[in-house]
Image 1 (cartoon, chains in turn orange, yellow):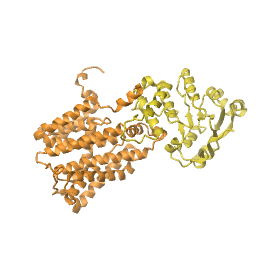
Image 2 (cartoon, one colour):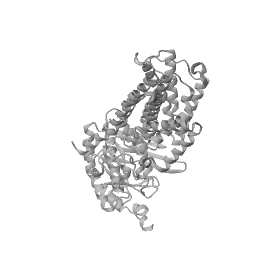
Image 3 (cartoon, one colour):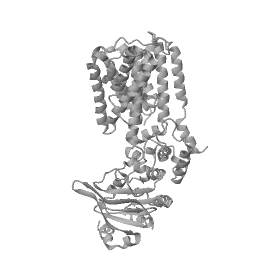
Length: 319
Length: 251
């Protein structure tokens, strides 16, 4: 095999730490214990952040309204369970398709314009959906949220329990599937073309690629994944509310990616773990002022740099 | 007599009161080695942008193989074989040269929309990349990020990317801009080694290069074709000397 072939194949080969991460995820199922609820939240946030990474880290689309798809997926899943059928997997599929549809519609809005335009457009879409959900209270329950959602057992066998064991296993499996799909996509020619048009749109066009079609495709895919994450939250908590569409959720998921790093697919997972643990630890210690410490952490992270921060042995060395 | 591959018919582009392209009718023959010269601001780059579809003309038509392509989107023109290089490198900085070329070759083969198989899983991609990397002496840096490459290597990648698109008409916008004297000839050797049926339109300042490389020359002045002919007649044309070649002596 030639060096070129070897190198091309090495791009998509599994790294040892990816397999280790998978092992840790599997083990966590057995040792979740009383932390299953927290782990479930982490898995959902990680999937949500992964979907943002696809558009932000790979395609370079900045969004401050990604919660639009998260919240939409949550409402669709909850409404489906309440009015059509309580099976979680069917509900998840329906939420995914519906969110993809919404993503495809909204993708038209992010094709053109600068980063600032995109920030505002995505922010605007999320705000519009938020007020719609607030106003249509006959459907969504308005500010009270959509209550009385009873989920059926997973695969007809596993009931969702109070400790969140089933919920965590469910969310984790979906997250792993999501990572697997995203991984295939980013290593494909399509995935590389996203990086290419992020780096240089002019050149991407000049090698014969239609930039808009690709941006629309990845935006739709990301919306579908975000909708799945929202659906998982609604299904495992039996509740959908305006909170899912709120601005803070869009901002949080951006923070998660900033903490974990963009463009290598696992930033969402590491970021979600760090974010939720920080939140848990700091708010147990000082419940009111946790954003102060989060803010301070962000400042340090930005000023010192992620690469340096996770390598303490380099702190004392001169640059 | 050879056939015309790319032709413009009274092409005109106007921005307010400025007319960077004024009634340009240009014929590029199959297999041409055609140079486009002209002083700064003559409208050379606008003409390239019109040909590649980045800019829409105010009036006039462009045809490829006799078919009207005036309204064709830029990426469709590339797929029809009109490929350009850029005066200022336009590269994918976060990719490696190998990944850039593999993606370009995939686009050329029409498989760049595949979203499930890994990049380079088609054996044709590896074969094409291997010969391109060797031809442009990029094989030793094929796995380095493009943004870390030396200028000369980046310049070679710029040209290699265009060649990877298998052009039928290649528009070279000052291909050796910023390349050291000693390395210029190598780039031109590579360009000269392209199949004879590939038509090349060269935009260049350096007269020595133009007269060495081209067989036909069009001189653009103030957006309009000022003179046109073979190298011998253009290089001795007193009018051309006056407006363009003489420029160097004054400035």
